[in-house]
Length: 125
Image (cartoon, rainbow, N blue to C red; front, side, top):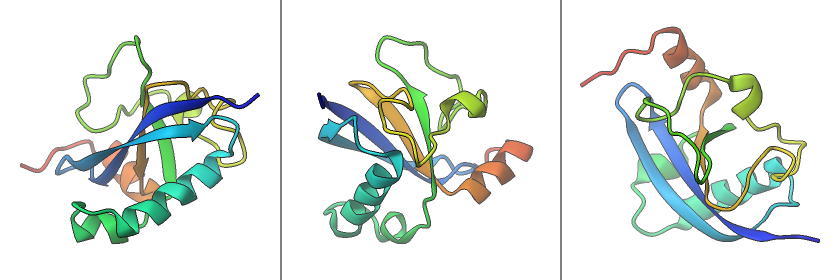
């Protein structure tokens, strides 16, 4: 039985500059694979009105859970740097298997940028 939920995806363009844009998706099927959902988001942002061009052409390749409804939030302003083994989604899993539920907030970002920021988490103001 598939369940459709609302999910917010935070497109992260720059960790150091805290440059991101949230997009809300309604009617997300939790039984689709993470890789399918990531591809859907990438296809959607290319034509989405109101999204600055740098966000549309960025090379996103990883997704991580930022926040679950009724859960605690991280102090990190863009994406929490802890618990990667638990919170980074694997493309072959379904969203449900990955722990996504209604009102989950996800980050979509470039893994190379994330690893660079994680090794030196300094904000550039």
